[in-house]
Image: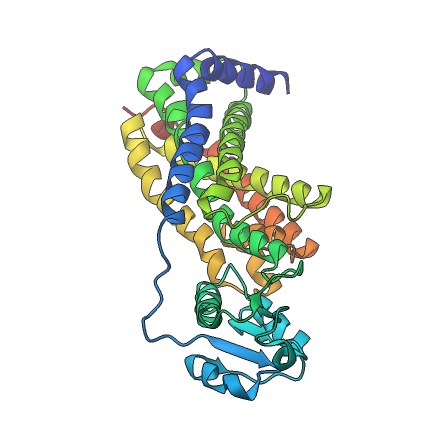
Length: 374
């Protein structure tokens, strides 16, 4: 264990005494925050693309006979109750609900005008378009008020909206960030030392080769985790703006268990990534060759992480597939639908495969034709 700590210390000295390496820890997070904030600002100014002939669906509650023509502009829907219709707006199955007061005709045109209520979902483009259309039509009559009471008329579920955006974006972003962090150090750590000739010197010291492998893997993982977490923080800070101002991070709260599961997933993903990249770096004889090997694998890993977006009701067995299972588990954790068994299975699958990679590297370090080839 003492020799492993010496290898870790050596690697840490190389990482943190190099200003460029330290800068690479924080630079991605800063750039991501600036880039995504800029994208979000632009997105806020982009009008929704809805077909010109689209007719919003609507539920009219107590629609007076004199206003029946208004329903021609919408697709009228039937529901058993007003509350059922409101729930449909929240879920996205219905665009708007227009509620007329019971005494509408009595107050219509009087000194005290009746108030018409229009319920909509701001996270749904067609719902917001339907709300705008209904408001414009009713405002044209100018004989009553619209949504003048203190009720809440935007039926968007803030918690569901925020968690769904996080569950969709974060796995893809985290896989990209963690892979980028790993690829920035893995080629240099082993192939770089082989290229400079320092690896041969290290191999003749009285240090077991498996201890060299463990020292390399642990130090590389610590660096990659730190870089990945800084980048993750940049994503979280930029997310409200990136989402066009729709996400309010204060609208929901994650418990300690959620953060613990996320951290466990991140740790296991990084260990697997760095182990896989290190195996390829061990095979290569130069940093350039190692980067050529790792590049395609990095793209595959990112695509596997993105695959989680296509599984709405995954079976438990899918969690056991490395990288794919981790993406599914991360999405489930962020959307608050995670199965503890599934998350643990994803972490265990990553750790088992990472351990096999470390064992493979141990065998590779014993092969002189691999470690000393020019």
